[in-house]
Image 1 (tube, rainbow, N blue to C red):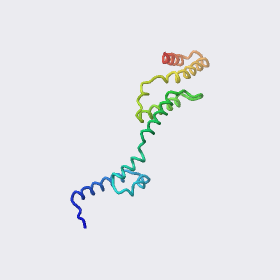
Image 2: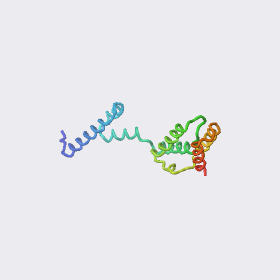
Image 3: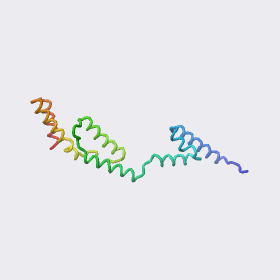
Image 4: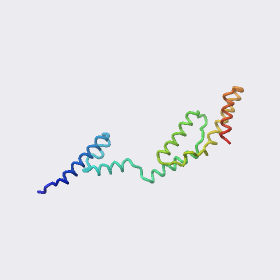
Length: 145
């Protein structure tokens, strides 16, 4: 028989602790994926493969988000809140993916402001010379400059 050395005991103990920590942090579904693994390293590698995106997938996702950003327009019959939420989700997701070129870029403004300007013009003609709407129109026209 082979005797287990103190170093081996320490390695086994550390592996057990690491596996225990991982198992406690996992849901039942995730646990079932890795429960047969013999080492914490094997568990970790399997979880990484399952949940980490490859560089190619990540770059494709960034390309899609940049395209959505560049082609962003207010949809017909879309209210301002919905438009803003849709736009914000594109920007936030791009930042999460590590794409920072969109931050500080204002090329999208003409796609957003023109429909808003038309909306303000329409409202003014419907409701007369309402001061708040005139102020909105002034703000939007300054954004176009």
